[in-house]
Image (tube, rainbow, N blue to C red; front, side, top):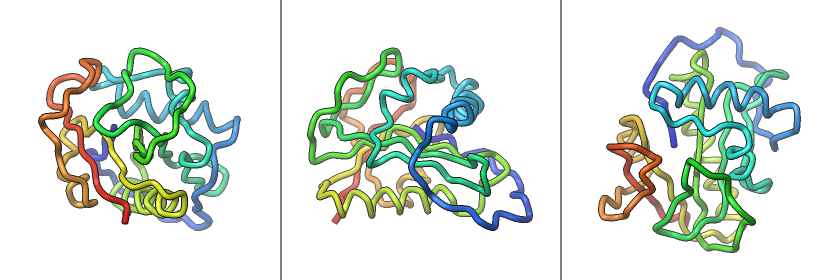
Length: 175
């Protein structure tokens, strides 16, 4: 899921920003960012479900000098399917498909290219870990952003009703 539509001016200084693995203290900020982005769409999952979709090797935060400025959660998931937002995931199973479940950038950092950088970082991880594809579900009118990142819609793919109307399954090759 992604809600990158709202653009606000970024803080003047984002020096020291880096992508790093998620650490335990990050979850409060991740949960706040997720709620602020998805609550208006009725898609908030809560911390337990978010944690279940954060595969350690493919999920990370944007650390802006000790503050979480964004995050990306991805996990191996069968191609053509997606997690149900109403329930946490069980154990992760091997798949050649990597599912980008969630990405949120702090509103104050949007419009600076961070979304594309996080996606590019995930593509690099996918390449080094021998994934073949990345999939996602576009919500909130973000399909244009995902198309610009190389994702193609698969409108015939059935989605859980929890994503709401207008959600679109999309994917792209990693190679």
